[in-house]
Image (spheres, helix red, strand yellow):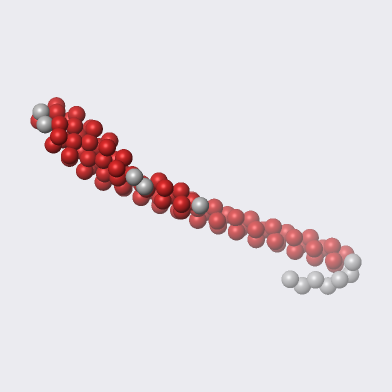
Length: 101
């Protein structure tokens, strides 16, 4: 589930970054060079690269978080099983049964 969320975050990231970069590039290009088209092209390229990098970073963090949560669940399950065995052993030993786990 976390992997799917991470993949959804990367879909279209380059296009969103390109759109943002093109807008910023057009403004800068118009101010600096009186050529908004050229600035938009440069901005779109830089924005696409930046958008992809951010999306990959977000996906990597989501995967790390999912792995940590899985490890915590496993540890909690192991602890619950140990507590159950301890309680069962105490109950059965109270009735003079021998318990070995």
